Structure formats: C-alpha cells, structure tokens
Image (tube, rainbow, N blue to C red):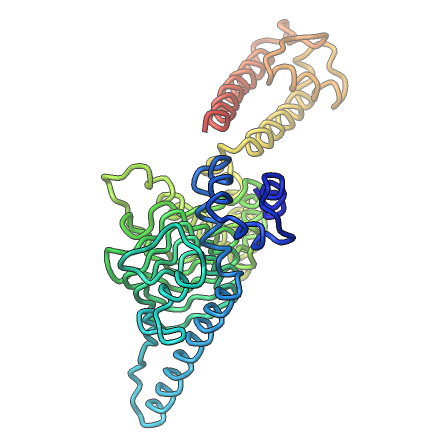
Length: 393
C-alpha cells in the first residue's frame, strides 16, 4: 500500500484528515489496527516512520541531523590540526545517541512525551523509522540506537561502524556504501533493502547481515557486460552492485546461504566478464568476448524466464541455419523461412509437417533433428521448473 491508499482507507473508516499524519493521529490506535488487518506489521512500521512528520518529530529530526553534522565537522577540524602538526593518526567521529538531548531530555523521552506511542524500545535510543535521507557519514562510529525501519535512501557511508545498533528492515536504496560493519553482536542488518545501491565492502556474516534484499542483475544486463566488457553497475542501473564484499557463510543457517553465494558469484562473474583488455591483440580480445558470451548461458541468472526464452530463440535460430546449409538432407526445405519454421516445430516437440528428413540420403538429417529435439525437451523441462518456482515462491 502506498501513502495515498493508506490515507483513503483511513478516511473511509472515519479517521479524518487531509494528510496521512492528520488522519493517523486522529486515532492512532485505530489507524494502526486498520492497517495491520490488511498487512500484519505494516501499521507499526508506518507509525514508526510517520511520527517523524509531526511537529515534534520534525524538531527532533532537525536537531539529530544538525548534531551529526556538527560532530563530524568538529572531528574533521581536529584531524586537520593533527595533520598540520605531523600526526597522521586519524580520529573517528563518535555519534552516541545517548548523549544527544532535546530540551534537556533524551531523544526517546522527548518523542514519547510529545507523540502518542503504543510501543517502546527498552535499552535503545528509539530512532526507529527515522528518515535520514541524503546524509553523509564518513569515518565514524554510530552508537546506541534502534534504527529499524529507518530510511537512508540516497546516502553515503564511508568507513562507518555501527555499535549496539539495530538496522532491521531499513531502506538503503540508491546509496553508496564504501565500508560499513557492526562492532558487536547486538546489532542486526536483517532485511535491509539494498536495491540500486553500490556496495564496496560490508560485513555479510549471518549474525550481522540476516537477509538483505538484493535486486539481482538481469540476464540481458549480464549479456551486455559480456559483449562490452564493461561493468556499468556503479552507475546504478536499478540493481545492487557489489565490488569487494567480505562474505562469510554460516553453515548452520542455510536460508541465508543463497544470498551470500549470490554476492560471491556476482563478484566472480563480473570480474570474468570485464577481463577484456582493450590493449590486447584484437583476435585474442574477440575470442575472450565470445567465450564470455557463451558463459552467460550457464550463469546463475540463466534460470530466469527471460534467459530461457532468449536461449531458446538462439537455439532455434542456430538450427535454422544448420537445416538451411544442409537442406539436401531434408524434403521440401527451400528457404530460410522453411528452415526456421521447421526448427521451431522440432525444438518445441510439435513434430514434422511438410518438411521431413530425406532417409535416402543417410542418417545426417535424422541426427540433427534428434539433437535439436533433445535440447528442446531439456528447455521445456527447465521452463516448467522455473515457472513452477515463481508460482510457488
């Protein structure tokens, strides 16, 4: 549900307001219950995020953002002074949310006193749902914060460590993450959305990662990399781009293995596909390009529906030319149109029509048909498996 749909649903059920904030806080208990009935858990998530759009929430958000910028500027000035004095040991900015006060009280207490709540986060500074978009964090340590459902879209993270922080279900869309990690076992990164994000280095161990939402690169984009020899994912083509990830796989938690293996596979595949060197001799370069294109048929993303139909088209086209160049072994085959239709019929298992192998010319015609028919059988089986997985996923 988007915001407009939520607002219409609340208005329809007696919660009046021209904006989502007004309608929600007309009766926040009822609003949360109405949304949770449609999608369990969504009401709490919306409430965590929408509270930052109230007057009190806007005040708190402005103070938090200002304090983050101030702390980083102060550390930057101290580091600059150290360098001028010949000391190149760089100090990290420590952003401890326990020490940030609003009107003399903690952030959590200020939010609870001024905005109706149905929940609390004992032991954490409650920043859940906070919209810290377009923020730049560099060479710093973030401490003591419940950041679940936070929105960090379009932000930059350079050498950032989270210590006693929870980032479950956070959005990191279109971010640039050069290096982030967790400094203890209490933090979590489960179900973080990394779509359209460029990732250079991040700790993907089970205890700290969980299951980040990764948008996999498409079959055709892989094919484009193989043809051009260039990786354009750093420009954010709607996919998560991994460059030098530190991947650890916990053998006891198989549900997270697939995503970890995908990160490893991505790095290896892109490294292989981008290995074309423009300075190499043209013949050697083109041979490598052809090999890369052929390898695309056997990648992990080969199991996508688009990959199956694309590869099927290539096979039908390939055998069309084989039939055309060997038309003396087939009856009634006169041109490319005939060979293409015949190839499609054999590949899909429809059988012979007007065109048939000329048995008087020997076994070659039948052999070619048998090979394509077998490949078509495998293709149809694979197609059914992939479609079945998508239906029952």
